[in-house]
Each structure stands twice: as structure tokens, then as C-alpha cells.
Image (cartoon, rainbow, N blue to C red; front, side, top):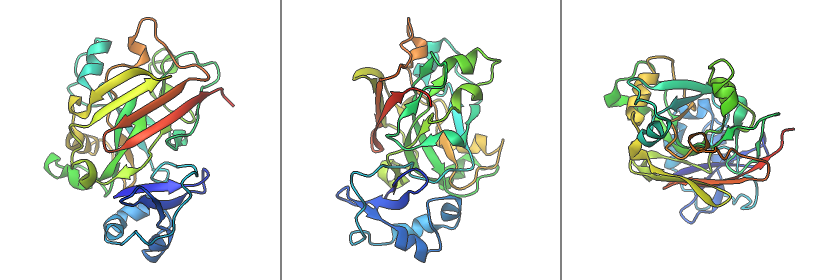
Length: 287
């Protein structure tokens, strides 16, 4: 099953993609289940499994040209992992981490897959990072790795935009360069594990800037897989249903190049992961 949300920011309607890729409105089904959106209450209440049992072919069609929002409502937190791809660690000259490198992105950075990316004021080092993300389906606290995948609701494409000056040159606080407005576009859809495999391994991933290939790798390059991340992170903080965990980026970021081709106004970023669709983001000036 592939979950979508369609409409203007803050006014998205929940839906699914049917077998033909048609957008179908699930608002009525969710209302019958006691929910209004794909939010923490929806996942916590087990409504995802109930929705999967519904016939969607006859549901109302959503506008095919309308904006896609992030496929889940704003989560309680966006947890990200640094240096989790072997090829990325190699290009930066960093040793492979013995423990996951964990940081948070502000939920105010959350956006739809094709929304514009706004350069922060004065930014000259905004970078791209194609990433596999997953959404937590049930409360995860001190989870054993053997049980960890039971807590995953599904997988989604994410671009972990990063302002490298803010991240690396302003007091060693990664969050400063990660949480800027529009820096967490998610989607186009949330794919349940049956769509891409329980642990989402072996998925090709790619990113281009102005049609120039920049990143090309595979999720099998991850140092810590999805199950390990759920287990480790849930030992540091309680993961709530609907939370987004982004698993790190492969090699090919601007930071690693000489000179670094950081993003500028007018650039077009495209990215995708096998089974999780594609997204296009235009780089715009700050508001």
C-alpha cells in the first residue's frame, strides 16, 4: 500500500495510490476508523492494518495535478543518522562510526516532495542528501533488534538538505544546518514494507542537480540497517508512531567535491529510490 496526502500545505487530504497509480481519497474510511489524517493517532491505533483491508478501487479520485504533501502528518520528531553509508564516510575521510551518529531536524522543515527549497538568508553552502527514511508504526522504547522491524510502518524518500556552513562552522552543532525551513521534503508516498521489503535493503538510490548525476548508490551501503537503527535509537529516546527516521546519505554530496558545487537559486534537484518514487525540488531565494 502507498499512502499519500494531497492538497495545499496544512490542508492535505489523506489518500492512497491504487494499483493503477490513481490517487484515491481515504478521508471517509479514516473517519469511519475514527481518524482524520495519517498522524500519530492513526498509526498508534492500528488503523494502517485496517486500511490495508479496505477495497480502494471505488473511492473518490483526488486531483492528479494537485500538490502532494508529505505522506504523513507532521511527526513529533525527525531523527537523522550521519555517516551511515560506507561510500559517504570514505569520501569525507571519516572512520565508520561504531555507534550511530544521531541528530534531529526541526519539524518546521517538513514539506512535500516537490515543494520549493528555500535557501536560508546568506547561505552559500546549501547541500543535497538523498536518503531512505522510514516511519515508526508503534511506540518503540528499548527495542531488541530482533523485534525492531515490527515497529516500522513503511518507507519513504527524503532529501536531507544541509547548510554546511551552519552545520560545521558555527559551533559544531549539526542541527543548525539541518533544520532550516523546507529542508525536509518527504515523499511522494509512504510505501508499506510489503512494497519494498521488510528492511528495505538492496534499493538503488540516485540524485541529480540540473540533470547532472551527483549521487548513485544503494541502501546495502548502510553501516547500520533499519533494524539496528530502531533498536539503537529507541535506547536513547522513545520513538512515537508517525516519527520519521532518516537513515543517512550515500557518497556524492557537494561537500566532498573540489570545488564544492553548492546549490544556487534556480537549480533543480531530482532524486529517487527504487520502489519509493521520485521527487523534484526547485531551489528558490529566501523569503
